[in-house]
Image (cartoon, rainbow over the protein chains, first blue to last red):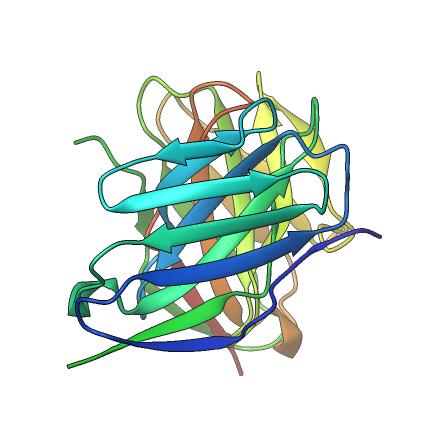
Length: 112
Length: 113
């Protein structure tokens, strides 16, 4: 079956730099996407979402970009902080679907 | 801020035993979900529940699993005869509608010996 995947399993950035985490999805029918942050021993925490009728959405320090042409999703974190260190998952869902398909995750490490 | 809660946080059981994992979804949410995450792997969907019945389930959710909403606040996952490979983190989630953000609980770590 189709699934969500990630280009980079780990990402290390300097504190204060911007981070970009990428995600490739293969189901062109997916219409809703979420980025989750998961800290060690905790459940996934919602960061930001985007629907397929948008190509960009901004939150506080985070931006999600959606490129439906190449089925690519990215999460940009501005001025990365130590508290941003976690595993980041993209997740997609399909029209009328009720479950999210999660990608394998990218571990973000923020270096002092 | 309302949140999903889960109990217990950790559960150790012997292979073949039954376990019940409990969740209290966010109070005004109507859709409930169970996911699992084997150590070091991605989060996998198990089942979704709406209007007191299962609306979707994955291949993982076989006959040993069942879900129930025994009252107006709790949502449970029962594993009837646990196997070693059931060892994982189990997350409950809820959403207001079926097509919006799912909010996750902190998880129950299940270890089957």
